[in-house]
Amino acid sequence: MWTKLNVSRERPRLGLVGVGRWGRNIVRTVSENGRAELAGVASRNPHTADIVPEGCQVFADWHELITNVDLDGVIVATPPAHHPRFILSAIDAKLPVLVEKPLALSVAEARNIRDHASKNAGSVLVDHTQLFHPAWFELKRRLPQLGPAQIIRSAGGNRGPFRTDTTVLWDWGPHDISMCIDLTGGIPEIVSIRRVSSERMPEGHGELLRLDLGFATTRAEIEIGNLMVTKTRRFEVEFADTIAIIDDTVEHKFQCGGRKIPIDRAPPLTVAIEAFVESITANSFNSHSLDLAVEVVDTLERCDAVLTE
Image 1 (cartoon, rainbow, N blue to C red):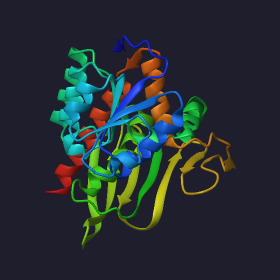
Image 2 (cartoon, rainbow, N blue to C red):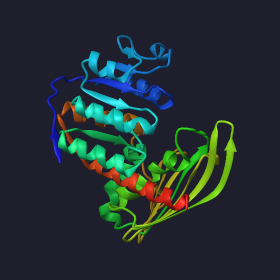
Image 3 (cartoon, helix red, strand yellow):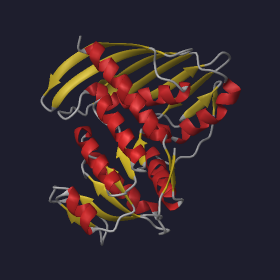
């Protein structure tokens, strides 16, 4: 499905809903982009006005933002429980959306967003951050020569953050699961998950989780959590004749067949926002990102069901 939008401005005017930890990164990245303007934000933080660019309007209420500011697109960076109502409202306002992962906290809500977007010519791009990493683009570019993946070994996490608004599975899981689904081109036929460790922290809950996903021809072994000793972001793919590795914590982010491969140094968030701006400017979006996001939420929900048995 392709959607054509009636946007004529060469420098789109963007709105942002939510200026928390990640939202502040978005403010900075959009301000540095040069091809888009951050025209307004919705935030109840009284200090938000101090960090937005000059001329950017600040509103306490999302509806005031879309009612009072002439926008070409909106970025949603709120806790995921609030994603559906903001995305649906943006679609009704004929605004393209860039939303942080996960798309929603249930597959029913995710499918409802997709159905609403399809029926109303809405456009939703989901920022599964690692899918916008330059190393990911290089791995995908090489896939025709590498052949089908046999085994995926993935690990992602850190010491914290400890959240109360979402679980470790739904906070960290979308990264690795989205990469596995995008790489294999399908959803897992088998899901297995277990807690490796669990700890109650003053700020929220800490966990380390082990996921085993069985795709049609690929097995994925995933470790995620917020009780890791140091930041970890590693994705290793074993093919028939070689191994490719993406490691975001080292100098050379991508290796293939034991060789260090040069890649672009642009941060994934920069690439994601550039893709969103380019889609608005070109007046075209496709549904792949939203379809994949629904599959990610479906897989998370299946894992959650096993974890809570």
